[in-house]
Length: 277
Image 1: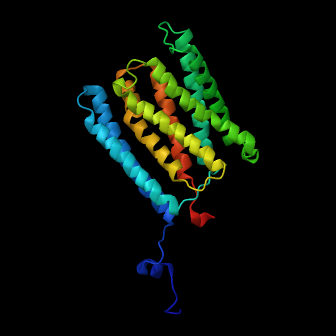
Image 2: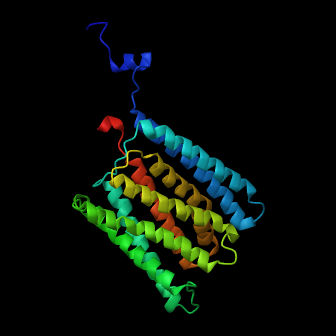
Image 3: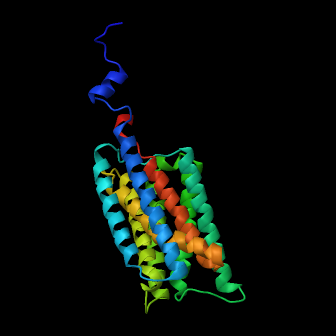
């Protein structure tokens, strides 16, 4: 054996090559930090929902977490390609789960508005109807994108359908403001609204990637921010509701948000690295 021959081990020692692709390292770092931030936020918010008290610490941690994820998203633009993948098992599962939760949340909302013993309805019937319609269109989009690979070949149809989740999130924000017109940010409502806004921006950036956008940083950042605000509001609300008994209607929407965040994180995790070109 030639003693001057370079082996993978010798590359590691000299530092000229890493045993892991840069894209994988960036993803592991980003998702590791995200997991720590979300776990901390969920624990603090569960305590707040149960015992009350000052919530300023959570606000500072949320702001810090969002800032850190912004920096990590910018850092990874050198290693990750702005390409949305299709046909992967993980994407198919996340899409199908999100579609199921969209249909379930819509059905539960209709039941509470029309058939429950104590009816709970949205303030604006028009906005509520449009929100439900776009929820079902979003479910159709998720199912079609997960069931067949032919959708991406029909670019115009694909782009039109991918507008559905954008409008759904926008209508959820509008519906929340209408339902809580006097105090839309009360009871930590700001976390919920910001989470929906970042989810809307994520789906907007997904559409831009389908059109050929060259940078995935905004796509990643908006997705990470949506996950952080879900950990600050919907996840602790869901956990507290399950432990103490809460409204199925509220639980279904929190679970829906959690499902959409799972879809978002799967999409980000499956972005290809530049070595995979």
